[in-house]
Amino acid sequence: MGAVTNGIKGVFRVGQTLSVLGRTGFNWVRGDRPPTPTLLRQTFENLGATYIKLGQFIASSPTFFPKEYVEEFQFCLDKTPSLPFSVIKKIIRDELGRPIDQVYSEIDPVALASASIAQVHAARLVTGEEVVIKVQKPGVENILLTDLNFLYLSARILETLAPKLSWTSLSGIVDEIQKTMMEECDFIKEANNLKVFRAFLQATHNDDATAPKVYEQCSTRRILTMERFHGVPLTDLDSIRAFSRDPERTLITAMNTWFASLTQCEFFHADVHAGNLMVLEDGRVGFIDFGIVGRIKPDTWQAVSDFISAIMVGNFDGMADAMIRIGVTRQTVRVAELSADLQRLYRQMDRMVPDDAPYEMEQADDDVNSILMDMVKVGESHGLHFPREFALLLKQFLYFDRYVHILAPEMDVFMDERLTMLH
Image 1 (cartoon, rainbow, N blue to C red):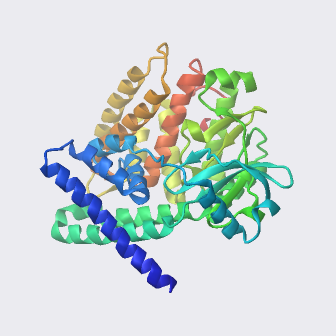
Image 2 (spheres, rainbow, N blue to C red; image 1 turned 135 degrees about the vertical axis):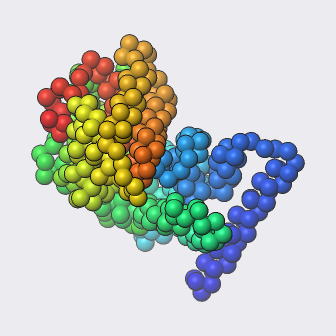
Image 3 (spheres, rainbow, N blue to C red; image 1 turned 90 degrees about the vertical axis):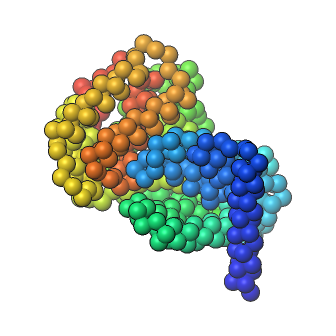
């Protein structure tokens, strides 16, 4: 019976999708014609969860998509209206399999945040601990599967009709998106990521950073109950001073922790934007939201490590050599020419953020993506194609570069002995 119901829902969802696409086409005929990337982003936002996530995938994948699309999809916001609290309460009760008041003494009916896949509520356990509950919205998984199967089929048809597109392997991209999205829908995997990261912190005797504790007795595939952190985003310099006498040292803690995870943890946090790094009231750095993580193959890691080391000392030949080992290419790449192009880009980067200029957080995101795309473009102009993991890794590295400008403009990352992974 469940399969039949899911099948009916699936057909209905494809109908909804075609209806939105039809409406977009009708508006186009009537003369409402924004630039193609803008039109695509607006359509994706109208189509909901899967397409919003797909838009965010495009925004973080300059190795796969043209620059104008990557830039436009930076505006693809994953903020959706909150579901009524009565719906959320029913999901929690169904998932727990027992009355809510046996587990939580209180739950704030007003959501802290609401996105396409889940929404988050503050709560307190009957044992007194302050927690947040991440609750998956109903029907999300079925919508994702239906949409992704529809996209996969469309991609295969497109590849057959236009063989020239096959070098980008559209169906391969959809396949990768499906894997990452279905992982995001499985809160047991996210809970496991949190436990692994906490174990890594313990194993490396790192008391200066932390990640939320998971309360397994009230977590399932669709709800995740975690320790609640109180603090401020890493880039809120005025507020940080209330919790940390030395913002520079706090930043170094965050960077050393993340760099150490590249070699000593199963994965790295692949979304260290300012909202996911907190300075807690006790001065520790809190890493939150482990829905997106990256894993690097051991053979790729050495090349990436060499690439980072080469960036640190400004060795452009070393950067070029490492990029060639990381990338996939069908042609011979000339190291000297790639090195010269990277050197030109590097000079441009230094001019982009003068140390004496006031620094805006919104600008930081734009700069990170712009530099990342330029670096990838330089590589691609020499015939290299990079795995998405490399783009994710580079993006985090560039975020940290921006945080140095905000929190520690006087710091020389090349020379600072406190940055253990870089020396």
